[in-house]
Length: 355
Image (tube, rainbow, N blue to C red; front, top):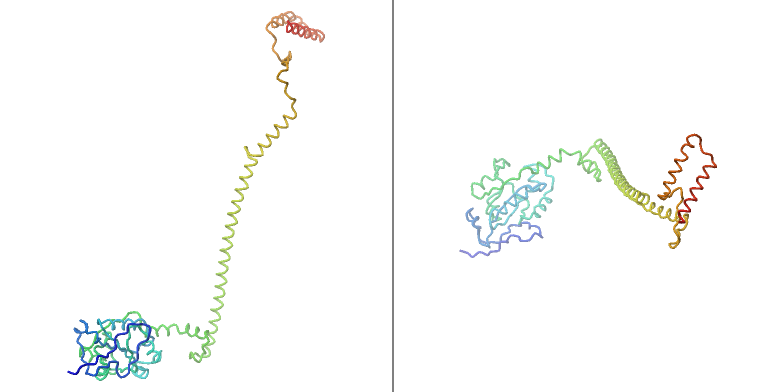
């Protein structure tokens, strides 16, 4: 058996460069390609022999559903090399319909997917044995739903019968048809947006009347946006005023409390002002009142009207009161008599004090 020259490229380990474009074949093996079985591929193959997996499609408006399908194809086996075939515009328009992206755009989109090792341009619609042999393909990966096209119920039927088909799962909720449906549904919005960005009505295939209508709607939207901006600014201004008012009220309350506290401290019942007033009043009273007698001066005599009489005088006074009681009852004493009695009492008092 002829010795094989193992020149098959290894899987890319870097994400800094895009995938390569296929030429005649990316495998340099001179000997006929020996396909692997599913069991062999799942057990793992020698390092110099990766499992060559092929996946094809239109890949228009490349999205996450496409990327997830290619991720599954890449991870079907422990050591795999993923080849992706992309159909041309001519073939796609013939069998499926018009595309949004051109074939060159679709080729470039696939080259920059991290799971792709090689891109085959102008891929065939139906896979022939010659094509499989040319690219040394071991398995073909696609979702298991029968794909009816080109006059057949399932273009992968012969691949499944040959035991070369490995299924992948579709991602629900995302597809190229869904994206196009969204664009058609919101066509007016996108047309108005692109007119505003500078596209012409001819480029957008918009009639003259629709162009005027869209431009008017854009003006109305701009006015609404201005009104909304003014409202937002007004709300912000009102909020700032409320915030400032709250700060002013708080500061006013603090200053009021401080003023009231200072007032009470100065003019309250025990305040500084009362103490000052009491001190000044005391000094004024001291200044107006006569000085006190010296400590060695004789004691001041009490007035006879305020000081109590000695016990010896009580009897004398009592005798005088009885002696004159009848005279007071008959007639009031004369002034001269009253003064004489007072003088006699005072003389008696002085004599007694002397004794």
